[in-house]
Length: 280
Image (cartoon, rainbow, N blue to C red; front, side, top):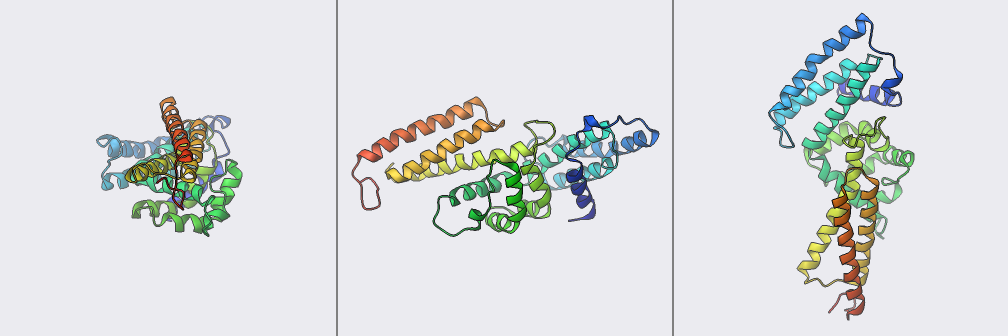
């Protein structure tokens, strides 16, 4: 990790418990001039992104914006006053969301969450069973990621592209802080909520994949197989309910899937089956 990034990461961890509203206003000449000197960097970042809204930002533009983000955070970090730290919090969110949207972090993290979830029900040996990566208790979750770093990185190595793997490797402590500590202001756009919503997304994708496999087999399913999917569906519903990221429509859509799976279970229970429990 390069020095500026290391500095910004350490400062974020150190200051995360202090809410900007508890700090004095930026009033001294030194504070105001330093704050003012940081603003050109914000302009550079906005300029880099202005013509590329959304997810499809060219890598060169992303790299320029990411560098500007890094410089902004380093510039604002020494200012222990309200307006500067409010700006720093705002740009921490912008910078992390920038990476979140443009480095394909979503898909591989969702797959990791799904692997961690499924490991609980598997008889196969896996390091994922040794750490509570999905624990609702954020302190336990933080301990899991802190102690299970090698397990996490080994697992995502087969799921992430080069850029995403590099992001998680170089910014691991920042990632751990993001995923296991609620932000001072509970904005749904914050990476904490966006990252954790991928637990639900991973389950949703797994259910969709399994339904697709059933269709390939002419909808023939064993009762055990459908029961597993129903449990997964219920857990996805609970996950979505606890997340601010998903809409009422998302909840209703998942509810419909669970209802259909319940009906499929009734059919599976009543049909004749082969030795593996598959309907004949």
